Length: 83
Image (cartoon, rainbow, N blue to C red; front, side, top):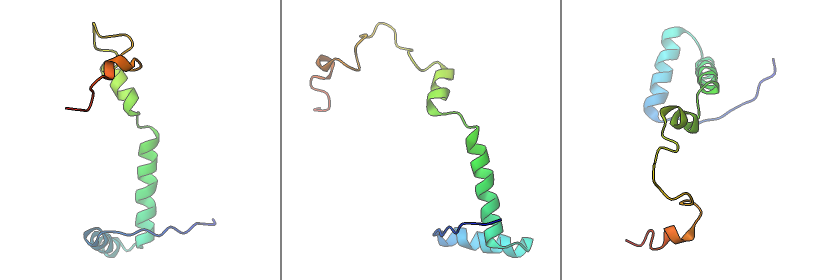
């Protein structure tokens, strides 16, 4: 299988952990990194977005009695950010 090369910089403590794990398992650093990236990518594919989480929690549209045009009417922004 053809592969692409990826170069990354690791903080020294993480590099030391990777070195130790490679020695303990008899696997290469590349094998361990590929496995970790594959696991991470797989977990992220099913992860809900922030919008989905907020919607499910009921945080969207939860203010009652507010202005209907709060996000678009410039009058509501008068003096905003000046204090």
